[in-house]
Amino acid sequence: MPTQSRLLPLDGYTGLDVVPFVAADQVVAFQYILENSPLTMTLREHHLHRASATEDLFSIDFELANALWFILKDLSRTIQLAADPLLDPFSDLPGTLDPKLLEDIDMPFPTILAIENYTQNLLIVMSTRAELERLFSIAQRIGLAGAQWIQEARERCGADRNGYGWDWSHYGNSLTYSGRPPKTVHCGFVEGIIDSDEPDSDLSKAVILHPTLSNYAKEHPDFDPFILTNDDISN
Image 1 (tube, rainbow, N blue to C red):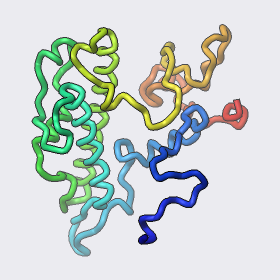
Image 2: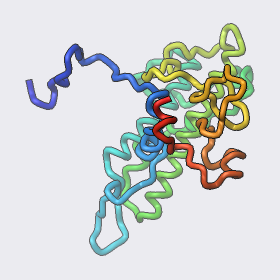
Image 3: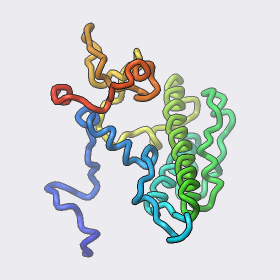
């Protein structure tokens, strides 16, 4: 067996196990995860390869470009397969949806489905550094908008016994980590750290939905939601 195909040398590891990520225990890792996720990261020096020593001509690292493109395709197919579970996920998907399904949940057509119209990865190109950063940023915004669309659509489908004809049970409905989902939202916070049953809960260190856009963040520009004290982490 080639070295690169051997299983990890862990006791009890079968090669099929998913390593659990317990969100409640990894609060301090959130910023690092965001900084290194293709959807939210900033392009750094080692992500760009210079194609010409004399001209402003670069290409995005091949593996990174493919990683982001895969996420976009996966988000698009998650939506389409939830709308029509009979589609073959290994074939070309139409990039369209039944208008009735969108009308029933009062949602606009998801822009990310336009990704199905392209036959190749648009990020695998050579161009100026500024243009590559622009293309990468556009792809990230499309992906984030697609993820937000899925979340909102799933919430709206949950209001109907039959999910308004959508089926999220096999596509996009199971998390690969064991973190508890956020509870109720109030005052711009997600009650993931503080026990909401306590009437005098201190929400000053709770996770903020939008660290830079929430009202709390605007009123407290020096507060960093990703930095907790040792006492906060141990609790």
